[in-house]
Length: 365
Image 1 (cartoon, rainbow, N blue to C red):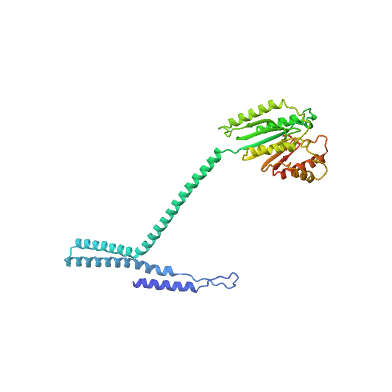
Image 2 (image 1 turned 45 degrees about the vertical axis):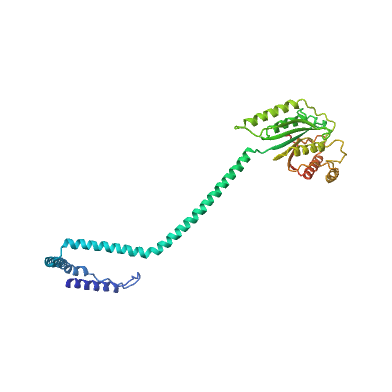
């Protein structure tokens, strides 16, 4: 122990010497101080070599003395070492049990509180989830019923097609085909796009369209298109073939063009067969020429003047919610200004009729 004390003293002196040296070196210092030579390890090596054997001898002697005292105490004692070991183990078990009981009692209030809130939240969430599942189930059933009703109740369309049969559309274009025949072909293409569950009525525009309506074709397409739309395609083919056969016998030779009367008939057809969608196709030059007094439709006067007259006479049809496409509005024998004036008139007419004019085109397609 004395040798160890000497070594610790030398170590303290070495530590103080190291701390007293410069903590920084200045590069441009003209008189650098050379560090002194360190001989601490050489001086302490001999003491350390002498200390380690003596320390080992001391530990062996201490262990021998302790073993000697233990044997002496055991020889003098009257207790059975085996029984003492068993009793010691029993005491250890009791200590462990008591420690566990104390820990359980200390944490019981906290455990009770946590368990209470756990059961409370679990019951609340279970109740909410159960109600939510019931509502979701009811909503799913309602949605399924609504969807199924929409699936089985197909969208119905009431389509009315007005085609001009007057002499004004019997003129031929440069290729040699009359405008009337172009309109007939365009109607055939329209019939190929009719959806399932539709009602189709083709009405001719003549000199007395309202007094003697000329219904050229009337048909009803079934609401079931078929798994592969085979029923709908078959209906389209039948419609087009029937129309082609009937249109071949038609002649555009009417002496007048009663468009206003034809629109009145169309409005009654829409009211007689209400549907989800109402569509009106008109194939005509849109030049009114009948027994209705001359209102200068499409002339150079303001379009409000003929509309005021027609409204006062009750000659504006009720076409509320009807989508209107006017095609094949040729301009033979008229200037461009007259065509635009006629367009403006019919645009305002259908606004007063509460219809929606989507197309007004010189093309028949």
